[in-house]
Image 1 (cartoon, helix red, strand yellow):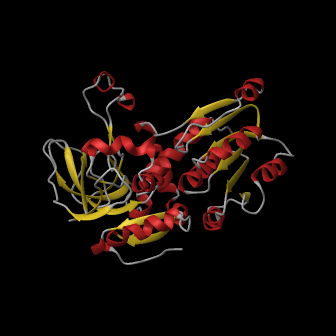
Image 2 (cartoon, helix red, strand yellow):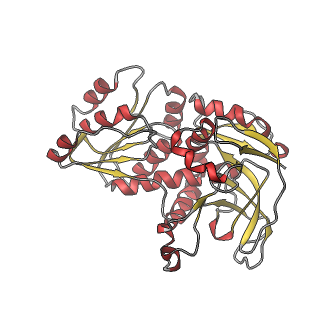
Image 3 (cartoon, one colour):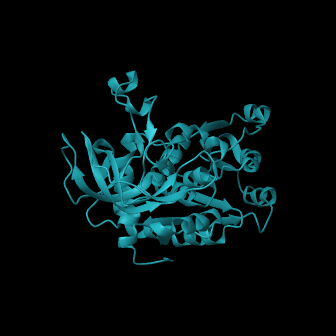
Length: 353
């Protein structure tokens, strides 16, 4: 089969022929339907310092946001059936560390990520632990089902922020994660959700399709000026950052009310300076948010089942696996919100508006 692989600790990816591997005990083989291109994949491609930890696992097939059909069951697998559409939690726990043996799998200290430290889904088939498979509602579009992992990240950011009914929320970054954050903030009852980006016309247009009107593009007005203007009425109760850009942190804190919460979800390649004195005097809180707990996935899947048609707007482009690097460029240059890579044999479209 064809697989998109990171083969060496340097810039670049390789499309290679690899062997289809049968599932082991408590594993299943998934026939991939759709795999999303995300910021992690771009960082792995570019080999930025925050992903050098992958070096011991190379070569590895990347891709961790995906959906597919169960094609083969390993020994001891129950609760799944052949042909079932699933999405997959990409974080594989070890099962033997103290946290795992005590039933606290979210605290596993030796987890390995599918598509990062073990072979992932930019391929025709992928072998995964059965416990990581999450069934999706019958009839859900596989393209939407593949959004489950990034949506779980968005869900966790909103939970970490503690968004309450009536809150005013600023989302920095209008990409896939930021769009999901805006959706879950609205679901939590936020009275006003403002989403901001920089030279992000295409992604802001998707947000309009998702029903958001209060949108800012800092390419049209400097960030400090734009935020000062929208804060004249009142500052934000919550700011959630999903950019990975250090320059947004100081303005984000300045836009936050006393006792407000700033949540960082972006992966920053270097340390970021923070004015702690101002933060302390305003009683502000700085929180980090990363992966969602396993218990969050049923809630995310339920949301997807109720809003599948709306979420379909987030998938803006599809490319075949043989042209996956073209999809990477669409994502890198912010032409797309979410690019989905499909196996060549199942590919029927090249772009979706």
